[in-house]
Length: 518
Image 1 (cartoon, rainbow, N blue to C red):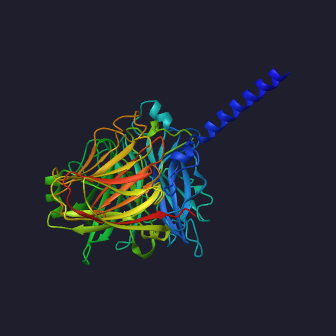
Image 2: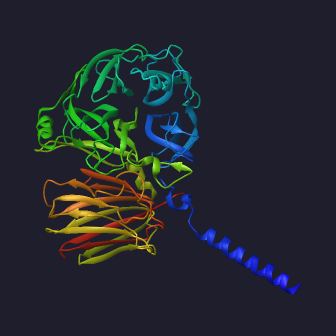
Image 3: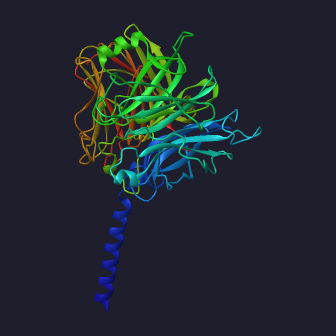
């Protein structure tokens, strides 16, 4: 009997120890679910869609497949926020129907009820999206994509699809999708910019139902390494002036500056029918071939919100890359969005820079602060987990008196895994190396080659803002003049940040904040 009892006790002890070990191992949620960047509770997510602001609430819709963790029949998922930082997932907004899957698109607040879907007291929100017909695709047809609309009269709680969909039929183009619609104030008309294979098509409408072709843009301009997708077109003032320019964002897959998916932009003028490149920007393209919104591997399909207060232009993107998005090491859910960013346009003698920085609302989440001024040596410890939680932090870095050579930051953990990034003043570039960052053996080109963003000179002085959220980093160089966004998957959370230099010169002033999650 004693032997039996002893055996039971030993078995129970072993089971208890096994259970403790299982509990001690971090879960996917603990390791990879971001604190702030929106991610779906379950299922697959890609492009942001239907972005708009109304009655104190920002609405984010997104390409969504709720029944799997890879791309599938597309729905529009839905999330809301009061400040563009904290997001709350809502019920699915749009489901596939007999016309097809619900691909990417946009939403507008129809203030003047031009569509007739609302009334004097209630401005409708109208979603404009692509229908993708899988049956026609299976049959080898070309005209598989058309544009449909739906409307909501209760702030997107419920949606009604227009009975006469589609509102824009396919003209015989295989990739004919992602309508971005906006109200052209000067000419009192709706404009739709649409991705048409390797260029943009522009349409106009008075009521969001009947559309007339106006022009096309981009046949031999910019990057053409892949299909053009998810366009955006908007007016913006040039920094420090009253001059207005128009910016066309056009995402491309593949063909990005560091392989795979990316977003490019063009600067010019729009007369209500045609978009024409600015002369200085044309010269810029002769030198650089394309202007990139983000040089990192993980910012795709960035588009802007409609109806944002104070006339601000705010964008958000899908924080992944088609090279490996369907193989990232999460199972219950896949993908997150970037931090929402405010964009501005800077003119220099070399050309135009579309700057983007985190929205100002992020500042209200700054908690515990650490400030340091360091004279740089070969290796400098900046932060450890005893200073703050490095899975939710924003750091403002001011580097001065740098010389030729490398200034290398490392996010590290106790397993020896590390994310390496910084400034190479000899090569005149920014870089991110995630080849030793943890799980890397998935998809195509996830860890190689090293991500690089060229600089026009070696910098003696430079500023960097780092936004770290568990498994992503967004680097904003010199107030967003160059941006790099990348995701990573360590086997244990990063808990230390260092800065090394092979020059042993320079100083660093650091202002770091742990971000509050409540």
